[in-house]
Length: 565
Image (cartoon, rainbow, N blue to C red; front, side, top):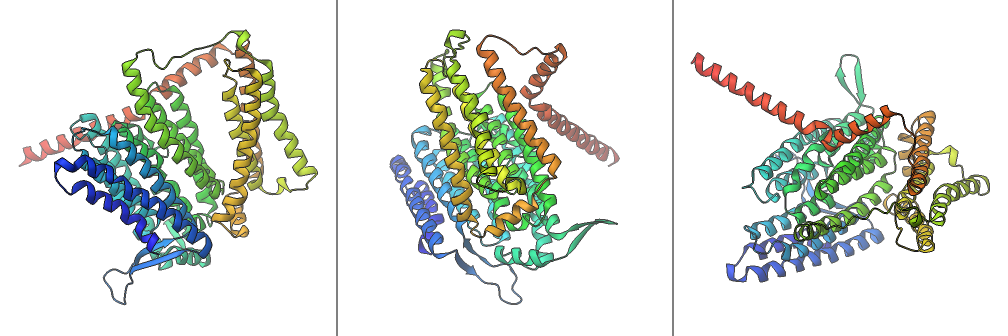
């Protein structure tokens, strides 16, 4: 319990170290401020060990008595999911703070920056360890306000505009979140996580939207919560705030893309037992997540700025994670969240170095396009082709035929196998570009990549799923609730398989200096799509015109009121 309390308090100690004292010792105090964050990380590791071996930790600071003005308890409830997130947040926070010490040197308002960074880490830690839905919402709100402050350079018009847009769009999701809390309390009489899950599972209450249209109580609450998560995790169409936030200092964007934006995904996984009661919500989450993943990845490929590209990459990955939740693979979504957080933190921190190097050397990074057929290795292509297409098919047939594992009876198993295959294919396809490396080395790297991805995903399926959700029946219920119509599921698998096969054919033909014979109208559509994605679907322009129309209308109304007076 002491370690669990120490974790969120240590970042506050960092804040006190930074803001206390005179200017002469400022740099020393900023450097010392990294140590409490490191202690928080160690405390989070110990908390994870205690929770894994002894069960959840519940801490109460306030217990409401009968007739109390505040009917909601205040305290922490740290289970395995919360403990894992505490380790992730404290680790990323320590890395970003340490990196910022030199990065923000001699920056105006440096003291405010480090203080707000410590507060943000503390708020994140408190949010993931909240004991009930209301406490989670309070820290969720504070996090939204902190985003406005953390953008740092409020003297710059573009920065201020991005901060205001972020603040405005997040409030839309917060309204839905607050409505979900009110509805949940009215339906179930509690906001405590274990209690609300038990009450929702037993409840048959419905919510009337319109005369003759009713929703199951769990569906109504989870849909409102999902809208709240959509805004924070930049799901389409709420994604437009994220690219505008890239004016913030690079360490802040690293914290945003590695930690803060995961809040929406954490909310869905925190309330997985509630979401698992509603097939409707899971199907909507799958649809929104898939759409966001496709649009985010497409817009990423069309960007010509490194931070914009990484921003849209995050949007796509968040869509990918929400799509996994919509399929009932909650443990896979958490695993994805952790991997993406660690990866995107380091990538964003390194992007500052790339930008600085590019300003010093105009020709950096050096782009070398080797289209010479002599640089292409048939061994590399055939290894990749058989590794990603033939070997998985053999494994699938052996698993189903020899081991008698009922793959066709559960979509959950197929989903995990399919994610293994797609992820390994993406990684192996990139290795075909290594023309400067000996072909046998690339082929060996392809085989090792497949083995690594298979091992990692099997760990996610077996060990990590069992760690987060020890009850196998609970996992089965999630997959059952998220189950799609059989024909639709088969069509999706077939379409994705066709895309991967076409990708391998494209790699083969490009390596030989050939091109796919396409009608002229397809080429015209391709160019139009490129322009559309380059301009971010013109959503920003549309939002700007709506804002201008709103301001114009307000001015006319104000002028009309003045004339009447």
